[in-house]
Image (tube, rainbow, N blue to C red):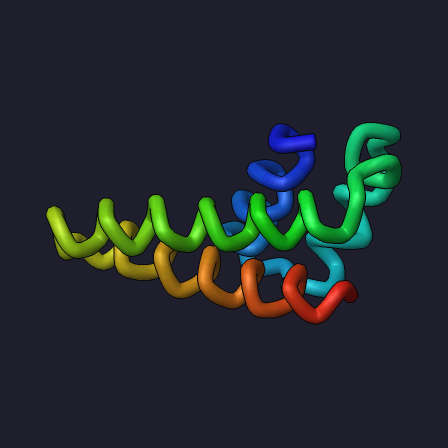
Length: 80
C-alpha cells in the first residue's frame, strides 16, 4: 500500500493535483484494498517524515515535498 502512496506524492511533485494522484494510486490493488484508517495513517506518517526532513534542511524542494505530503495527509484523512 505504501508504494502507490509514494507514487501519488511524486505525481503531485510533478504537478498533478492531489485528487488525480490519489485516483492513479487507486489503480493498484494494494491501495484499493487498504482500510481507510491505514490510508490516513500512511498520510500522517508521510507528512510527519517530510516535515522533519524539511525542518532539518530547508531547501526549497524539501519544503515543497513537506507541503505536498501535508496536503496528501489532509485529503486521505477526509477519505477522498
